Length: 108
Image (cartoon, rainbow, N blue to C red; front, side):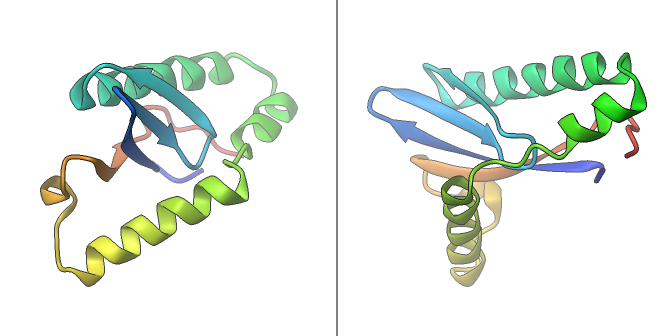
């Protein structure tokens, strides 16, 4: 498994939704920063739990990718951001993509 997990965040009505595209884990929060922290916390807990499972179970749970629609949305947003020459930290505050380092060396 890659040591970098691809994620994006966007405003949905009055809440922020953050999604890890590689593991199909999502969170909601009231602010962008809080949503990022929540997602990072959820990912860390998920990966810690996986580390305790037998290899066969761990392998299948590391292959959980987000649905096609979610991955496409992430790809389009990342492509448009790069096309405009904007670094991820400068994306308009309604949406952003970011990467989280995988804290655990889990191998399939």
